[in-house]
Amino acid sequence: MRQLVIGDIHGGLRGLQQALDRCEPKAEDVFIFVGDYVDGWSENAETVSFLIDFSEKYTCIFIRGNHDELVYKFLKEGDHNPVWLQHGGESSKASYAKLSEAEKEKHILFYENLKNFHVDDANRLYLHAGFTNLHGPHYEYYPNMVYWDRTLWEMVCALDPNLSPDDEAYPKRLKIFKEVYIGHTPVTRIGETVPVQKANVWNVDTGAAFKGPVSILDVDTKEYWQSDPVWTLYPNEKGRN
Image (cartoon, rainbow, N blue to C red):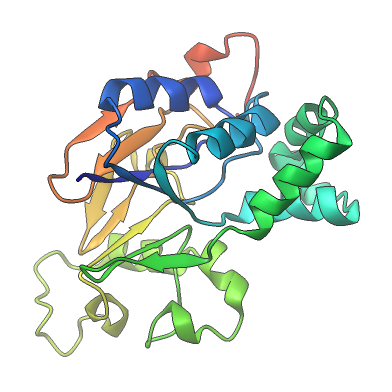
C-alpha cells in the first residue's frame, strides 16, 4: 500500500489528472489531498466533481484549504469576499455558474466533510497550512489557523539546518510529529518546483496555481510524480499569475 500526498490543485484539473496518470493509481493506495482544490484555473467545480468521483474508487482523505473554505462560504452563504474574488475567486464563481443546484448541494456536502488535519498511524501530520500551538493542531485556539498559518513554513525555512532536535533551541512544534506535510505556501517562492523538505516538514505545494506543476509524493519512499507546469495545460488562461 502506498500513501500518497497531493499538493494544491487550484482548479487545474488537467494537471491533477496528468499527475495521477503518471503515478499509476492502485486499488490499495491511500490518497491524502492537502487542500486548495479551487480558485485558480477555470476547472474549479470540475475538479471537485472529479475528486468526488475519484473517492468512490480509491481511499481518499481530503484536507480543508483556505480557498476551499472561501468557496464554501460563497456557495452556502452567498459571500462575495472581495479579497477572495481578487485571488482566484472569480474563476470559481464562473465555474460554479455552470452547475445545477443539485450538483452544488453535493459540492457543499464535500466541503463540509473536509478535515482540518489528519494524523496517520506513523504519527505523520497532514494539514493545509500549519499550526502555532506548541501542543499541536488539536489545541489551536482558532481552528482555522490550520488552513491559514504560514509561520510553520517560515520557521523551518529560517531554521539552522545544523541544529539538532536535541538542542534546547530546536522548535518544540517540530518534535510533536514524525513528519508534517503541508501545502498553502508555494515552494516556487524559494525557487523550487518539486516537493521540498525543511527539517521534518514537507511542502508539496509546487505552485500549480502559478507557474508550477501539481505534485504527488509517496510519503514512505519520497518518490514523486508531477504534471507539466499547469499553465501550459491552460494556454489561454492567466490562472492566479
